[in-house]
Image (cartoon, rainbow, N blue to C red; front, side):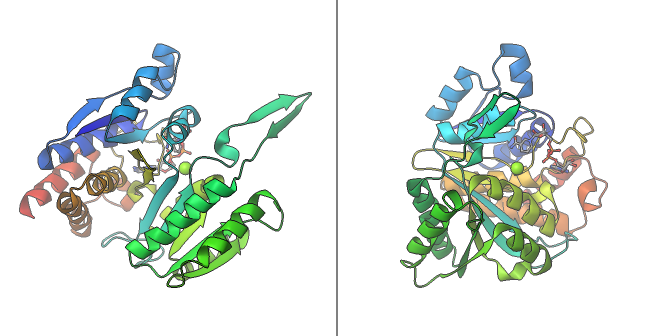
Length: 326
Ligand code: NAI
Ligand code: MG
């Protein structure tokens, strides 16, 4: 199996080294490395070089680190080009992580191909405009995905977040489609909140949520919010899935504030790698990675974002050691 690996910028490179180290311990995948991001833009004049895009299209999966200021031209574009319409972003409180809500386990299902992130912006006479695209087709596809996901994972409830009282046509379309799809899944509870109140409930009483389904930009914001409830971006993984392709990337970005210091938490990237392994059929190996990471953290060995002292490479070594014991 062929994996297009894109480390990207900033800590993307640092956490990708960990992922590669762990992958090499477990499976025999053909890892092919490609460039994209701010540095690629400097070097080639293109943030997402054609060669990288073509390779992604031909691979069995894409493993992505992070891009910097070019994120819109790289990862947002890749999701659209590869039609990975669903972005699955689990936020689970892990053993040993001090966080606001121990025991919390929610998943954000974010629509990935349209909304304001379509990038249709223009400026005229001092005014800037953005066009927000919400289609019934993409709304139905993501709503159905959320309910099917809930069923498959044994989850009980899907909550739609939108702002249909203000954005009557765009959010209204999304809401109406979610309601219609929900009626087909009698075994899964459905409710909805306006995004603003939903955020308040997420902070004050997140246990009322299970699976969240929302549009692209709200999903981007809410997925960082829920990551914050369980310990931060250092531990938040994600998968972008479509009919033909899949891209796996941590929720976080290039984190230039800590890049180059060797202290990034590779947990998000490693849990992302586990999601990729499971997608490729390596369920046992995926489980092993998850256990090794959680056991390492639970034993008090963590990076500074979780209150520990370990460097990225030291934490990775501990995870690899644990893998050997499982
Ligand atoms: P960010 O997600 O890179 O970082 C936000 C905060 O979380 C920072 O304080 C950072 O140090 C911390 N953090 C993130 N990941 C961490 C990890 N693994 N371990 C420890 N701490 C971690 O978001 P920010 O700072 O807003 O953006 C930085 C750059 O990344 C920008 O150029 C932005 O455009 C880009 N970006 C790229 C994304 C992508 O490629 N998917 C997503 C978000 C931002
Ligand atoms: Mg984001």
